[in-house]
Length: 293
Image (spheres, rainbow, N blue to C red):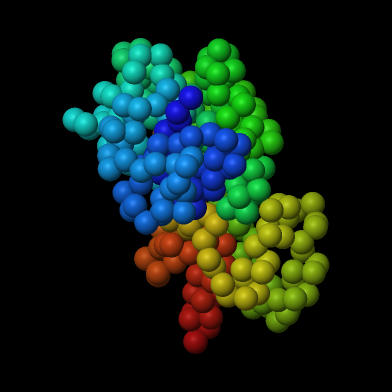
């Protein structure tokens, strides 16, 4: 069975690598071919368009940055939905909003293509180790078709419900992560402003019930000032914005998230866009120090 993979960024490249490690033959496309080079060989070929990938495969994975990128690849004049064969399965692992996933599911259905939304949780290291968690929105039969492939890339699959429900739960998770990171950074900024050393703050706060466990993995970023991206800050801001869009669509008030997403937007303006989202700490502490001057 030939499998397609479109989107070979930080997460997609590692997911594709694990599929290959389990013997899957991939046909791939990425706007920057260089990112595909390490995956080319006996189990990997490159096509020069998404449409040419779709024409060759029975199952297609996409891992793209945002809804606009997915829609452009899928629905433009030479989009891949027009080239996938009837009964093919499209698995979108991108972090998008639920209403968008439902829109893509409807577009796929009109072409007799099965759609699965299966966003993931896990860092680049977790993706490399094949230990991702998949949050799945799909019909039961479609999940069973791809289950073994998901388990090549992850260790846990949560079938949340029908189309859009996987992206719904992923949105809740990223909302919590984005708010928690910003709140922790703000607390650190206050603590340092009050004269507490960064080391004492880390040693005292990490592990407390009030602090999200994942924040321990961001300590080295902050202490070293090295914000090499595992999850770029601009994509966290995008996810928080999409959460606010979903709140509007469902008449759910998200006042904390609405403020937090604008803090991330300000950090983007200050040059932190492609850094890890933990760089919100650098933005907040730098802002604090500037105000003190």
